[in-house]
Amino acid sequence: MVVAVGLCTVDLVQRVPELPAPGDKVQSLSVEVAAGGPAANAAVAVAALGGRARLSTVLGAHPLARLAAEDLAACGVQLTDALPDRTAPPAVSAVSVRSRDGERTVVSHNAAGVSAPPVTDLSDADALLLDGHHPALALDAARVARARGIPVVLDAGSWKPVLAELLSYVDVCACSAAFASQVPLDNPVVVRTHGPDPVTWQAGGASGDVPVPPVTVRDTAGAGDVWHGAFTLAVARLGRVPDAADVPGLIEYANRAAAVRIGHEGARAWVTPMSEW
Image (cartoon, rainbow, N blue to C red; front, side):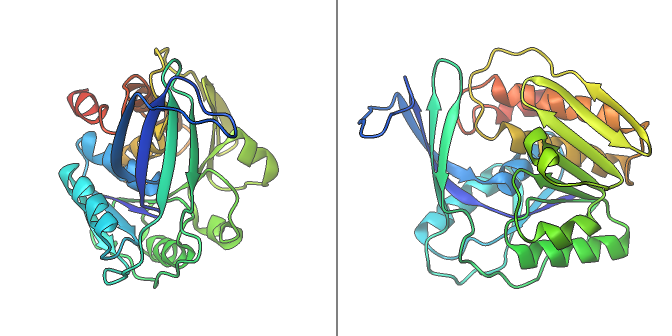
């Protein structure tokens, strides 16, 4: 079981010939609505890869929240809602994807202004994935995981104030190259992604890099989230905090999963191919 703790949004995804400039009005080629957010997308990837996935987040009882919950259920993701009676709309992300190369823009309110109680179910967790959203949820889960010996993976996409405390509980910090250059990291395992370039890593005094498989890019939205979900599932199957000998294989698995996502257009078009892979 992978427990993903963090953000769940409702994504409005539109494919466009070109990303609009300020003042432009563009007719989209297609439109989709699906659950999104780093933790949610990662949980969907875990389920698609044959793992058990539980998402701990804040959605509430708004009609848009029910839409996201139904989408997650259809993808095989269990849901733990910290504020199930909340009537305000969930976070909504406006995603535009350029059809010719899969490049995207995202505008989202994320979890700003939402205070979630520190309650997370880790009863049968084999690994914990955090994205840094909903700080109280993340810190509670990280502390419990550390006490129980559950490996903790952090999706460090951008700096958030909670990370100053949260990083001390993290076994694997999987971050972008830009993040890693801004924040000193001394976690047992540090993995840095570099877009289409090889993924680099450090663990136990060793280091290396793992190439990204070639793929025709169709859609990059959520690709990093899928990578983190696949990586955490591989850690869960390992059953312990990875060491230097483990890390290259874990990265290779995550790279291949992300390549499947990138090679398919649409918010959910990659799920069936990934489950078959």
